[in-house]
Amino acid sequence: MRLATAGAALSLIATLGLAPGAARAGLFDDEEARKAIVELRGRVTAVDDQVKLRATELAALNAQLTEQLAGLRRGMLDLNNQLEAMRGELAKLRGDDEQLARDIAEAQRRQKDVGQAFDERLRKLEPVKLALDGTEVLVDQDEKKAYDDAIAAIRSGDFDKSVKLLDSFQRRYPGSPFSDSARFWHGNALYGKRDHKEAITAFRNFVTGAPDHPRAAEALLALANSQAEMKDPKAARKTIEELMKAYPQSEAAQAGKERLASIK
Image (cartoon, rainbow, N blue to C red; front, side, top):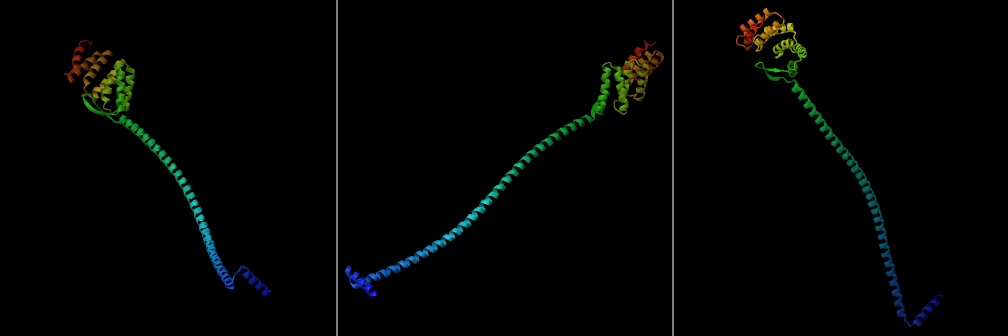
């Protein structure tokens, strides 16, 4: 069988016109080609192994990067949530600041109003300086108003009201700088309402309590007139004599001297 095969091969070679040496050369070339193919396959396999290794490494790296990217996304999401929370807190703080500013402004306005009201009340309570019967005095504003109201009633001819106001004034302000003047005008109010008996008492109390008062002479003359109205000429003349003796240079003394002639 081998001989037949060899013969067939030789016959094929002879048919092709190849010499035995040429056949050997062809067989040698095939062997070299096989070796080259095997070597090439080995290289391809090595390259393929390297590619697979690299692919595995790249897959691992890609998985790692993917995980890192997911972590970064989660971090960015958390950071965004924190930023939104901070924006909300900032907006709340701004709102609180604005409300606080409004509250402060309102408190300052109220404080200003309270301060102005307090100053106004204080001004009403502060004593005022004025000249009274040639003397500078300090009096409370309420005290001055009470006195002024009583005098205004006399000037308007409302003697009943004036008597009541002056009575009240003397009870409320017994040590007032207006006390002497209040007693004098009280006598005049009583005279004006034709209560001559009470007027005599009021004028006498005034002169006795304030003999050096600028209106003392005038009060004695009014006292004499009240006595004359009471049909007591003797007492009236005696009062006028007292007037001319105590206050000889006064206008009231001159008027009293003239009044003597009419008192009978």
